[in-house]
Image (cartoon, rainbow, N blue to C red; front, top):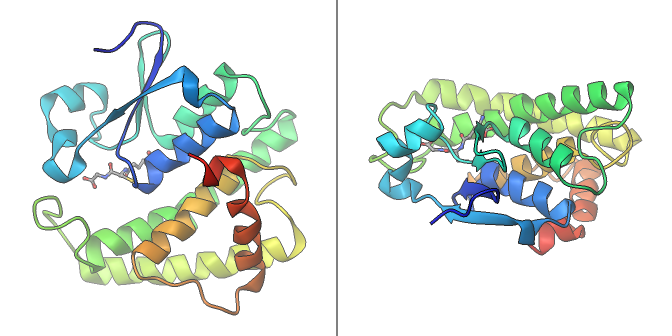
Length: 213
Ligand SMILES: N[C@@H](CCC(=O)N[C@@H](CS)C(=O)NCC(=O)O)C(=O)O
């Protein structure tokens, strides 16, 4: 039973995109202000009419807002959470910060997290035959190369910066952090020579939002 006016996150524990939202909520110290509902992706609960009514894309996470609307897409959900709860901003406070954070967040998605996801779903067993109805290993392996280039790009960037965007912790760091976790889960190890990226990740892992979810 969902309680009215409480924000509810429909998530699948251990999956990278829902983990991004957990981290955002934790960073806002709001874990106790949100209800969490587990969606059983492995048994196709995200491909039911009931779930499609919340998100026609059939993906987790989905957020039910305090107003009773449904928001999907992790970036959009993070925008809502950031504006709704007090605490340090995850999306930027000045026009420049907002622009830079949005840009770098998108780079972390398309150059790492989404590229890794395509590799995982197309060039490995992914989530198994029940879910992976169409696979193209050539496309998956092409995206693996995109991900490796992306890791090098962020290594260079983090050689000069402590954070992914605007020299402040933001949703761009959250996206890259789970991009790296997903890469390792998929068997795509971070090359040892990417020392700035590895050092950044070790620093990030100390943040309570990543370690105490
Ligand atoms: N662009 C979406 C991606 C969401 C996504 O792909 N979620 C994965 C879990 S991490 C999912 O629902 N996978 C289900 C499937 O592949 O059938 C976002 O930012 O939230």
